[in-house]
Image 1 (cartoon, rainbow, N blue to C red):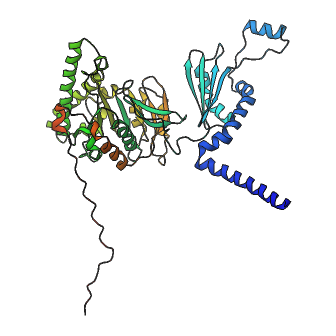
Image 2: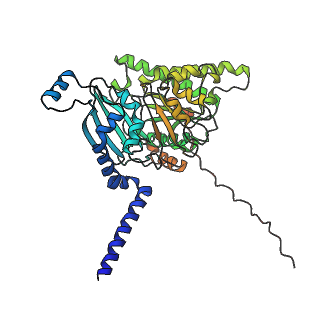
Amino acid sequence: MTDVATWLELGGTAAGAGGLGYAKYRAPRVYWSLVGLPVTWGRFTWSYRSTMDVCGLTVRPSGFRAFMTRNVARREVRPVAPKVRRVRGTSTGLRVTLRLPAGLEPADIAASSERLRHAWGVRSVIVGETKPGYVELRMTGYDVLSRVRMPRQAKPRDLVVPVAMREDGSVFERNYREVPMALTLGATLSGKSMYQRNLIKGLAQLPVGLVGIDCKRGVEHGRYAPRLSALATDLASAGRLIDALVTEMEERFDLLSLYGVSDLWELPEDLRPVPLVVLIDEVAELFFVLSKKDESERDRVVMQLVRLGQMARAIGIYLEVCGQRFGSDQGKGATALRAQLTGRVVHRVNDRASADMGLSDIAPEAVLAATAIPANRPGVAVAGDTSGGWSRIRTPEITPDEAAAVCREFAHLTPELPFLAPFRPVSQIIPPMPAAPPLVKPRPVTE
């Protein structure tokens, strides 16, 4: 009987160890919650003071504090480290709020984030300022971007679309009220189309009008036709569509002027025009011309697009521009348009110049992070904005058929806009793929 109990104990221990090993790679959230979080929390608590000291994140105490420590407490006067105000565990890591002593700033903590990461054995340490004098250390216990799974509560709402996961475990959201215009860059097979699919999937569930400009004969946006209010598939139709949008912009400004307001959202709900999101798949196609005589028309279309980027936010027209590269070498007006695109998302690029086009003017230190994205991790990108902040993100994998199915499901939300009626795409039945010819040519049976 004793032998049986011993074998049962050994078998249970082996099964538990095997289960934890399986969870570490297949269910990292479970492993982190059961094993990683308690171990990391204990390591942080035990070594916090010494780690801050060796990383140079301590300062001399004030004269009064030194006097009280030496004469009242009868202890040795030691340098002061940031005060730990709060420690909170999450499903992906650890959040620590620190109160900075006089003489330290958030940049000092951020400069030592790599040393802190190794000292506490975590995947990454990201430093964020919460309010003056306070910073938050967002530690990640495992590689959140290896297998992206969006939280269940991350759902589209009020022109806010959850698109990807940040490396600190938080959700990256595309907020059109805060960042109305954005630019997405990426080389072929970098995950740029995946980002766009997640964006369209979220936008399709909101009461907005979607306008597609896909000069590659609609091969990307054509499958989303049931949810699109307009679609341009070549340069000529794109020019006419942009002209129609500019005309609508001017009419909406007249409406704002009539009611004495300066923003679309200040109008009563029954008078408020529907917001529009303009999705441009490959912006470089709008700049290419085949002959010199077409340059004037190209310049006019680009200038109209620049006008939309400069003024359309107030009347609820938002631009989502995508491309492989986008800079002054593509033609007149490219730099002026890029300057209006506040949000920037840069996937893997073919050269540093492409990363510079997207990030150097808003977050120069993010350029190196964009050029270091490996080719075997499609969907990983660097997201930045004009505040100078940036973060690594990755979009969850989604197939074109899944995004198209969502567009068909929410096709009833497509608004009927008379000025876009000439550009309304017609949903077509996709013909089946022809069967592949047999590898062996049949021979007739002869008698």
